[in-house]
Length: 557
Image 1 (tube, rainbow, N blue to C red):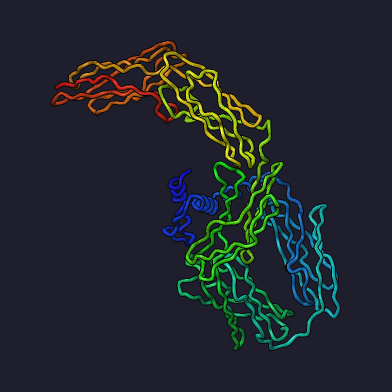
Image 2 (tube, one colour):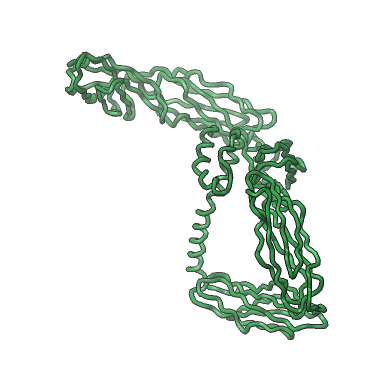
C-alpha cells in the first residue's frame, strides 16, 4: 500500500480523530509513520463498534446463563474501628429476575441481612458498619445464594484517637506527570476527626487554552481517617505541555500544589516491511507535541530474539513521535512470540511480534500468478508469478531457478530466482508471444531444497477487428472480432470505440472451438464525413493483455 492510499484510508476516520483533539493538518509523515497513524486511528475509532458487539455478546450470555454467586468483595478490606466498609456480591451472569444473597458478619460488625440483585444486573452492594475497638480483629463476611457460599476477610483495626477540630496539615502532588498517568493527590489533616469532613477542590491551568486537570468539587475524609488519596487523570492537550495548579480548601486554609503535564503515550506499533515479516520497525506517538525538554520512553523486550534500547529519546520539539532506532532482530530456530513494551510515566503500551523460523530445506513455496490466474494472452509483457516462502531467507539469502516445459510459449522467464536475506517473497516475470492455438504449460520454481509448480494456459491471440468501410450516420451495422485460432474455453473480448459517434458493446464472447464472433454497431447522425475505429483487447484481471485496432469506418451524413 502506497503513502497516498494509506493517508486516504486514514482520512476516512479523521472525523473521529479530530474529535479527539488532534489537528489533522499537522500530520505529514512517511509511509511507516502513516501506517502506524492509520492503525492508531482505526483502533481508536473502532471502539464504539466494539462496544456494541460487546453489549450483544453480554445479551446472548444473559439468555443462556444460570446465575450463581461468583464472589464477595470488600472496599476497603481493612478499616479502623468505627469506620464503614462496602460489601459487594457479584453473580456469574445477569438474572432474569431479582435474586437475594444472604449475608453474615462477625462480632463487632453489622452487615445487611441480604443484598438484592435486580433483574438484568450482575451485582449489588451494601454498607458494613463497625464498632469502635481497642484491639484489632479479623473476620469473614459470608454471602450465600442457594447452596453456594463465598466469603471475604475484613480487618477492623484499633480505633484511633480523634479530635473535634481538624485542619489541613499537608497536600502532596507529583511535580511532573504524563497524560495517561493516574496522578495521586494526597491530603492530610492535623488530627483524626470524629466525624467526616468535606474538602473543596479546584484546579487552574496555563496556558488558558489547556485543559485543567479534572478534580471533584468536594472530597470527604471519613470519620476515623486522617488522610485521603485522590486519583487524578490529566487530560490530553495536542499542543503539548501545560501546567496546572490544584487547590484544596478546608475551614479557612487552602493548600495549592503545581504540576507540569507532559504528553503521554498515544500509540506504540510495529510496521514490518512487506518483504520481511521478521523485520521490526517500531514507532511511538504521543498525545501531543514533544515539549522543549524532550520525552524519554523506556523500552523492554521479553525475549533476546529482539533487543531494544533501554530508553529512546524524542528531542525534536513540536513533533508527535517517530521511529525507534537501535532495534536488533536475531534469527530463531522455531516460531517465537516476542512481547515489547514502551513505558512513559505510569502508562505502558505493548506490541507483540511473532518471528518465523529461518528457511529450511523442505519448507513451502507458493506461486501466485499476477495480475490474475489467467488464461494469458499474447503478445504481452508484464506477466508475473509472486514467489512466496513460508519462512524467511537466512542471512546469506537464497538462490534458485525458474523453468518451464514450454519455453517457446513462456518466454524470458526470470532465472535465477533470488530471495533477499530475511525476506519471504520475490517476483519472476515472463513474456507471452502471439499464439494461434491454446497452450498449456508448467512453470517450476526450485529454491533452497524445495520446489513448487504452477500450470498456466495461454489462449489464442486476437487477429483482427473488422468494420464496414462506410456507414451512414444514424444507421446500425455489424463488426467482427477474429482470433488467431480456436480457444478451448470461451474468451471474453473487450471493445471500445475511439469516438462517441459510434457505439459498440463493452464486450463480446467467442465460444470455445470458434474463431470469430460478430457484434452490433450503432451510429449517430453527422454533418460531415467522420472516421472512427474500434479497439479490441483481452484482459487478465484488470490488466490489458493483447489488443488490435480495427480498420477505420467512415461515418457519412
